[in-house]
Length: 231
Image 1 (tube, rainbow, N blue to C red):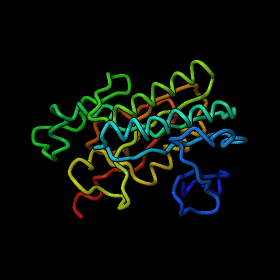
Image 2 (image 1 turned 45 degrees about the vertical axis):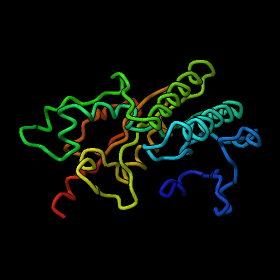
Image 3 (image 1 turned 180 degrees about the horizontal axis):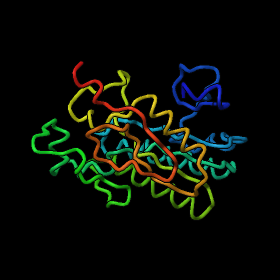
Image 4 (image 1 turned 180 degrees about the vertical axis):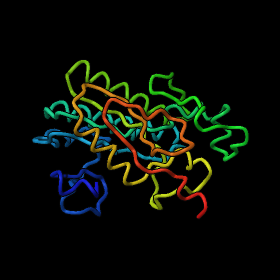
């Protein structure tokens, strides 16, 4: 990831043909050829998988789930210390169908006080809003199992809205934006903390956020999407 290079010795894995020389080509959804791919690595940050939350189950089943399970297995066999899983806020997206969250994502703040909104915590029951989210829930469960059964330290990051523009593009984003700078803070916290397992919402310190950002990994977001409100 840009921003971490210089502080860490980073090597990438991708299935695309066009890639920098430092990125090895592998299809992580296929277990063949993955043996030893993480040899010598201290940590693995798993961003693999199709990232569209509207994915159909067939794509989750054929691509995202195999990629997650294969990376976990390869990391475990290589003796990696830390596995960081890019989970998603959509694992609890079902709460957004109900007030007050439904009003916030629509940008309708009338009668609402951002300081009194019940924050969705990581210990609340999961409520996936689609097949993509269900795949992420299974990934979190697999990470927990690998932590308990094999001692692999695993951190699951329920990432909010990250886009190339690094700013809100619709009303929901004023609650869910994760800026590039805060994303780097999030990943670095996940890499450096000493815990066997943790789940953390990855969102900036937005005025209208509805996810609880108290966490075990020391993540302290600094940005607020409100700075873009009048632009």
